Image 1: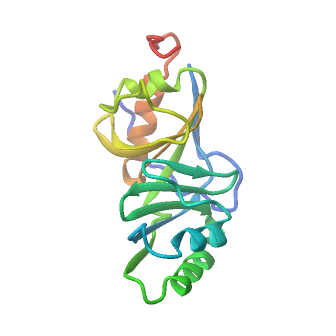
Image 2 (image 1 turned 60 degrees about the vertical axis):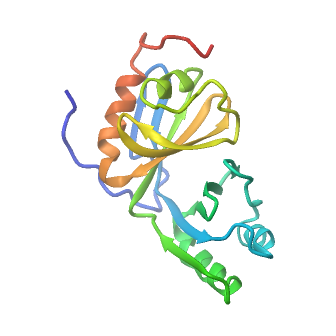
Length: 195
């Protein structure tokens, strides 16, 4: 049975995790990330330079994520990026993108309050996700991205390293996904298929 409740809106300036669980892996909903959706032809002339200049992070290749300590640029589709940055820098970066993309066909949306990012860490992260996603986890390498489902919910996830995966979903279903991840990461519940 899943406990009903509300996920409180995180304080963007707080360094504390909103939700946290330790089982076979750690499951955390960390402080609020700023998130920008950028819809643009990813072959647009000069886009690589614009992204690198704005975020100090390279434009990712097809199906990949470019990650630094405080930035993630996620390939979501041939014409879409999800950009994760510090919550308090979203407006500054949107203004910079708008200025640099002037004359191009694009759409920029601040989706910071509509989505959340979970951090999964531990040796069993692949086993936990394999319990609820139809995506093939056997060849899921570092910096790869999947848009799929987890526990019947739409989600995107990517690897930061071999034992750390980040998952983004709609905020409206984050309490359900947190409970699902806790159940999937319960002690002594992993099949050990990916060890």
